[in-house]
Image (spheres, rainbow, N blue to C red):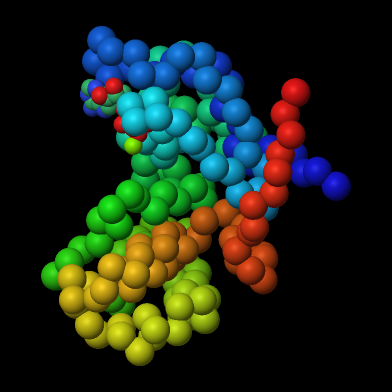
Length: 176
Ligand SMILES: Nc1ncnc2c1ncn2[C@@H]1O[C@H](COP(=O)(O)OP(=O)(O)O)[C@@H](O)[C@H]1O
Ligand SMILES: [Mg+2]
């Protein structure tokens, strides 16, 4: 059974000042779907992710998340609705411990309510982080830091992630 799109992007144009980076882009992501966006360097992938999370705003078109237009909302509001970005290059707080990096992920009001449950889930997924919770993030290996970055993202209570036993696998999505 195919679910309704949880994220629906319709005909967006996105500019950096006078430079147009995205032209009339439309796409949908369904609940439980793993969706990969592939494009050449400078194609606009990062611009699109930053437009979904509210760092950029589309000049025209709309972005709807669970039926709500989020295209004019600010990043903190979008995170609280349940969209989390795990950034390229991890962007951890290097001088803070693993635990404090994870807790930073649960900063929004909604995530704060679910902090203990999400911390347990992150430790279930990455038992190493439980052992190393007092270690400074900068002293973790590259792969361990990646676990912290993903764990911090999960601490933000992204929509519906906790309803699934495992992280969703890729599923081919035929369009057109
Ligand atoms: N803040 C910005 N100011 C001006 N141009 C930008 C800015 N961010 C990105 N761009 C330009 O937008 C285009 C798309 O960049 P980007 O979205 O980072 O591409 P990708 O992530 O697919 O490699 C590039 O030509 C880039 O130089
Ligand atoms: Mg990029």
